Length: 298
Image (cartoon, rainbow, N blue to C red; front, side, top):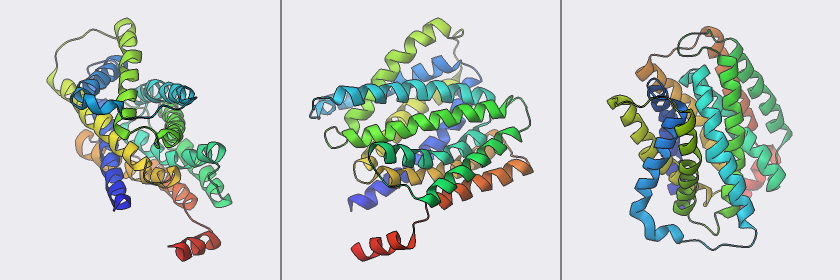
């Protein structure tokens, strides 16, 4: 039952994360990235105030501070810097496609840290997917929505590497810390990290309904909701398996970007997107022996 619940939690989390690209694009039309991200984190922190007694549900173990420090450095700090900058240069749809690489990058980090095995097929899939991402960016036509697609997609790729490291840190801590505690910790770090940046580097503030609603949505539903759901799922399945669901983000993002932002990919980019998805799909193919062994064990 927990396995099915975790899978449903991941699907909802992927829909929310896909919608975050749209919400960020809307918010960035009026406010700078630092103000948007800081506001997003403070909204999430306010939401966590309702769960205050449950936030201390953890068992600290000697050395956990190192993992917590790495987790805070890569996400929210570096991750949101890279993603915020990425969406200044590329479209929401293209950035969403780059997230296809997250499962592959997570598999590599999990192999290095957790000794989770990565197959030759997965390695080939990684190479194909990266090639597709490069074509996706270089084939993009510069426009108001995506002035420099190659730079933007490269920055988004860096954000996905941060997300991969973050996922492994979550797995290492999930046995001793609740999903609620880890998500609240991430939001608090983000609020403390991005507020000074917003005050020093942020642009002028003015009231605008649509961008403010986007920030509230990002804080309450994406930062709180999506991360809470993802952290819960990580505690009940392997990192590599959970990361496979990230493949749904590009599909959801492209559909939402088309419906809400009227974004479209050119023919070359559509082909490159298919290549990315094929590479990711190839990486998930299990060797016959491994698949047979899994069937026997189940």
